[in-house]
Length: 144
Image 1 (spheres, rainbow, N blue to C red):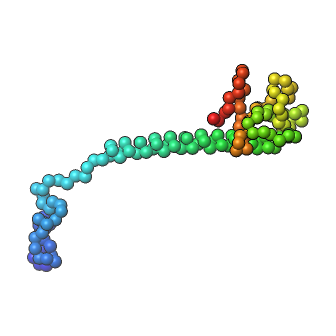
Image 2 (image 1 turned 135 degrees about the vertical axis):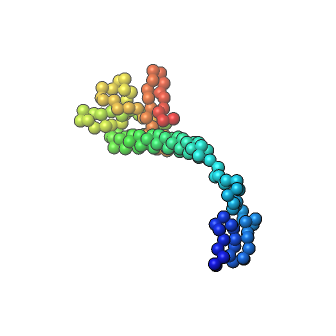
């Protein structure tokens, strides 16, 4: 090893030969410079698109979760209320508070009842109570 080659010379000690021509990269100072491609703008664009997609999906899931929680709240409120009949699927019922501030379910229309009106609900085929909004002549289902 007394015959050490300069750093710019590519010499394989094991094979005892110059191997610059066999290497997959440039080995001399005069060789073209190897530059990694600048893909920063592509990465930023992809990150933006991915984040936008994920945020949109998150917002949709969040909205669906909030709607489910509202349905759960309605169902707990109506299930805990007092009523002495078996509700029929598809029929509209009205929820009121009585004089003792206890909720009760009734078929009496809010226009003809003097109790505190809490809302109108319809029993779905899934046995979930769905709140409906009364308009002038017809009713419109919420959360459709």
